[in-house]
Image (cartoon, chains in turn cyan, red):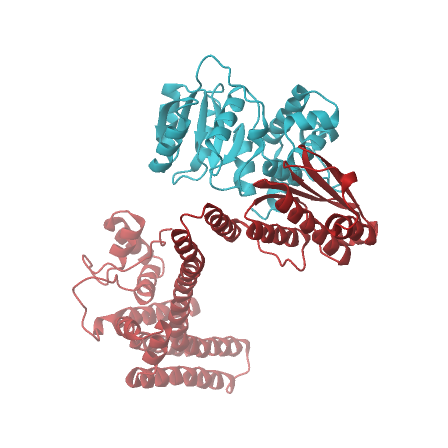
Length: 228
Length: 412
């Protein structure tokens, strides 16, 4: 199932400098394909096929955005994220995976990825997603919004340790719902009578909350999904 | 996953039976230390000797070496003589006499030797050979156990042990009914039981471990076979169809999409019956529409519940909305979002296609009026259709559910 959300964004093509993108994937064919397809939009400044290689090369190259494969033999995208996040906070990560399983998506977002797209995405959509991630925004597909809603689904009987941190506000939930229904940011703004900027803020807040959720939420989520 | 390192006796540089060398190998310390430890333990009521003999009896020789030991190695009986002597020694020291207790000690010693003989009748090397030729490994073990000579010996040995135990109990009980006699009786009874145990133990243990490893292998094999069958039945079939229809983009897309979906479901999704769970039913409806109309339905379902008549109607209405979108909107992708809340179930079907003016839908067009709006009304729900020319269409289906049934669902 393709992640379609990005095609509905305003293309912010008028950026003077080309974004510097780094590819991490254990399939050389796939890297070559992405490099060829993205060449027109961004500058691919490096590639890596293993976690160790990725960590050293990303530190050396300092790209704007890292396209990160989720499943790799030696720990996967999550290991790269965890190794880089503290030392290089300015580098943005966009997960690019063939899997859209909930545990992969939420796991990567929790580890600090700014977005998650599947490999069936079209090159133009991918370029747009990269640009949005580089601008500090989050890339949310309807499917990802659905996972988040599922994970934060209201269960009134469950005690919540830190409501400020862990609960989504009604507005955020509303925005996520519209995202999951396939609305673009522009349409969400129109529907809720707020500005696009506000929609983006809400989405970024959801992402932030997702990363900062306490252990209680996390384990409950995992238990609900029968991951533990 | 690496198999756990197993303890073997080392046949290469052994002094007696290779116990010390084997333990040293296993623990990664020097042989000398192990030997010294045994010597020190020997000072404690001969514990070292007992331990050594016990290890000798229980720990198998390391397999895979070329120097095959002679078939019936008399030296293999030595550890049991050792166990017997050790038990006798302890007997003498604990009871501090050579009278009735001494006799008991001798009996124990003899029994231990007998046990050793029996134990070693179930010769591991020969069983291994048998097991390799048998179609079912553990069957080999069973058949091997009924190999005549070994069977007779084990049977006689076990019988003797049990008999000695019973005779002992009787002999101790009849002359004097004092406390010592009771204790001795208990000891003899235990010896009798031990005899039975010794007869059965090697067979049981080996059968069990062979069964276990065989079952692990079978599970692995089964998983592989299932995957192979899945790849064969579906993936190869689909690839062949794609090759044949390489020119027909629509068909290729449809085939590839259907295959991707089924592989994904197989890899990541817990399966549920579409006739029982709402999410599964909705996903099945979406899959059918995808396959029929060669479009992709981006399905997101939040929450789940059991189906009943009303929920079934909701799914049917959603399916109709998907079909309409696929047929009339002229787009490749339709969004389907469903959410199960405590008091209502809602489904949204959205496309970004041509759109239409809902007010101009003619009365005789039953798709929207009958299958969607009418059906939802009949089941206590409602349907809204928002559309405009060029704006795409969104169908909103909302079905309130009573608190009772949703509470029952939650408490399930």
